[in-house]
Length: 566
Image 1: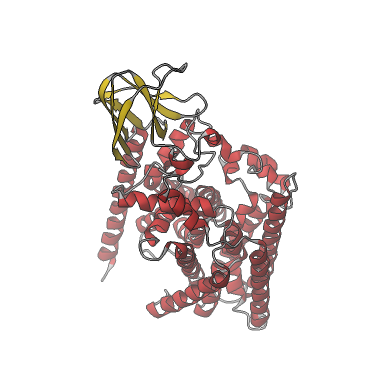
Image 2: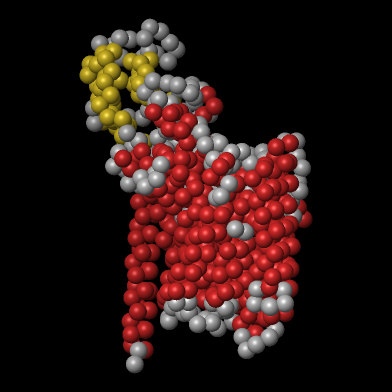
């Protein structure tokens, strides 16, 4: 094993990773922001979260401006790390610079994580090259330029760290944390961080680490890696329960099945699959070509790494790692092709990955490591460096030419919020019973309706909005007749509605889920609050227990290290 990286080495790794990340966003400086498939979704989430922070809501759950101001429970279902990071950056840099800064931070982190993995087995110079390869790997370029999936980008940045943590916990790599308890804690934290970044990438990660632990049990001919895996995974899931448990439980409160609507199913996105949508076909061809390129480059680098691995006193450790990474890469490749369709049908939650080429997220890890290992061979060093440079530059050129560049997306979203109009919602987070396509794009916050659903004259009433925030709406109604009040708000089980402090059950609009409240003559005060549901309370309690367990493990590891010191 190599000696631990020192402070100077980490500065070099930071410089290489940061420099590579800046090169990745170089086209942004003259073309504007890359407006990929998911750009509007993430930018809208950042704007909404930042606005709620200004209202004093630290951890938003309801997306106030989605569905043109009617809202949706997006923040309950979408992992929080990416939209919280994007919102936080808006307090430091101008809004139009947030995407670029986000990408630079995350790809710098990606390089550092890859350096940490490679440095455990390879020399400094090779590990630095691996960091650059991972920070600008072909799949990262696809995500940055054409997909703008900032959450998946963040999850992918952590992949090498997850692999390293799994290797340490199962015994395939030396445990540098000094104790099993600390290794378990390290794995749980990075595993939880992936789940709190992006759910599809987390499913890929979960299957990948399960494979690593199973491989270790097979190689070591012991069940010990599996027991360690059970502990690490359990603690990791416990840490994420404040998000994951409500997201899982409240799925039946929304139209979550829309996440697998036409064009978003695995069957529509295997490598080089063609359908009836020309735009989908064009993108799938590009994604498939990037996947094939990444697999071929990984295979070539793997062959070069094997020839070097067979030499020297560290051959046993490197051989184990080489075999595990190669088989992991092969498994990922199999899951990208149509012949694996039955696995996507029957393996738990795998279909929610949606796009089989997303397995490039894990292939990029052996690609970077094998590339670093290949650089230790003097005869092929410069040839391999030139080949990587040609592959990356060629991929970047193709993607830059085929994506949409637009710096007006964020200003348009800001104008929509400033004009009290908001932005479009998402199909899968639309509350059950609602069809958000029937919601008006421009609507008043409070509307008076006749008391009788069948129609009639609209009563005269004085409406006063006392409070209107993302999680609380207070409206005072003064009328001499009974009436109904339509609020610009979609009904959802977490909303508690009171009239004069007495709970009431709201009605719904005929063709959507707009909340309607019946009130009696006189002065009536309608209060609507987004309350904590039992599943959120239980999830938070489990996460708190997980944090306490984590602290206990770290403390036990620290005590063990002190007692072992001379």
